[in-house]
Length: 265
Image 1 (cartoon, one colour):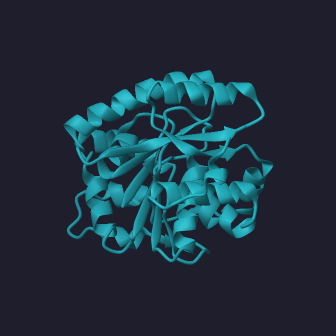
Image 2 (tube, helix red, strand yellow; image 1 turned 135 degrees about the vertical axis):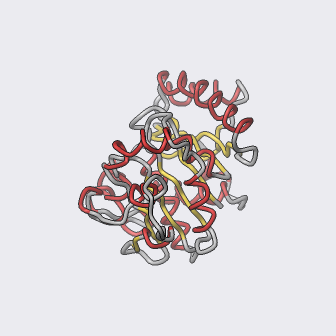
Image 3 (tube, helix red, strand yellow; image 1 turned 30 degrees about the vertical axis):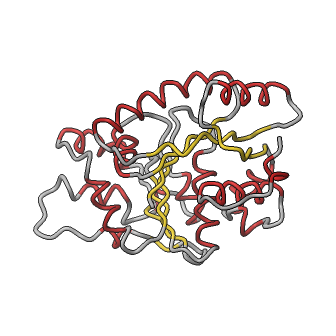
């Protein structure tokens, strides 16, 4: 299963959601891979503890060989790094993605990520793809490569307006490139249950027929502490309410039963 976490708006929690869902998957015994397609490399730094600029054998190196003439290309698994956490692996980002994008686009390499992830799917049970806050070559490649798409939403009106554009773009990609892609749902992130605006926005989205998922991820300083310590919440604070919310979200996405109390606003 290949899942992409995507939103054109920045600061909505794409990397946090990607890494924490992947960490839960790995903690459950599934061989799990995080693919970091954002040149900023937040997921890479979070899970490997090093900035993407300090790493070799990155996703940029893997994609670069598709536009450079080489007698033998390296296999996708040769670019995968083990994280400090059992069963959790990373195909790291690189600042070079910015410079490589035009070459890949000019050579029409939009399907190369899907080819690579199909091969990696033989070794991994779950693959999570983190994306940049833009609809660019890499995010399109990720949407073409994925089975499922998760859209973070940070409960403000700007994010709400962006949702309509995002869903329209995804429909176009589904029709033209990836009929298998399913929008799993919208995740209300940094949710404040005591504030009226987030609850109002979520209710209005549901009334409009938007696929809002029933689990809300709370706003918590614990998430920032998790980033600083380079530890997903399941490892740093397994009993924290936000950790339990991530676990509930993982269960919902995988069709498991979740106690109704944990879904309440």
